[in-house]
Length: 227
Image (cartoon, rainbow, N blue to C red; front, top):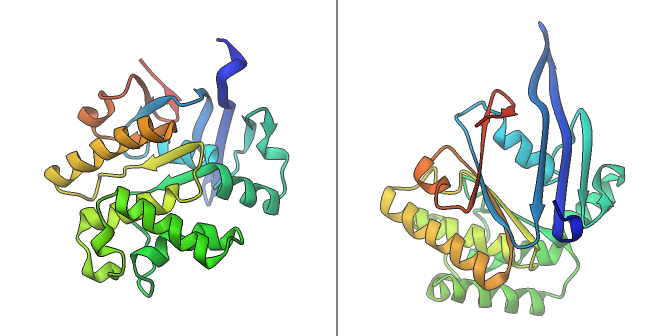
């Protein structure tokens, strides 16, 4: 493969957890390359190891062994502060559950990554409002999470993940908690975002229909790729 446009590379990733009866091996030497602006899906049943891989590639967890680089930088060599700053600047995350803060309204929730990065409240608010308008939520910007529907909550979470203009968006079962009609709309939104924002997009899902819409699909079982 031409490495010139490889954005992120995971090589021989292993992950094990210790428990009372020994070691539980969750990932068994998984390797994956993600090109700039590429969209791919990781498909597998519950317990296959796909979410663990996403968390490692997103620097939310560290592997037991292996290598992880992004734009040629060794992510595993960074300390906690360095990796947190890198993650907040370069990566966005969407999960099955929206994880919005109930005491903040929609625009305040979207502003959080900017405020963590030290941006001014004015600039953070402008960015957040722009994204909420893009998501079709301009009129819901000052509503609190308990005033929003499931689909609206997930769109706010997506806006929050994009507010710092990351180069890659990781999504873990992003439609798993939605009804079929809302799920379809959120799926369409991901593809629109990928094209308009030139993102690399990595989706973890057990939904075969969703996964097969991607140009590249990796199937995982028992911590390894399979055909």
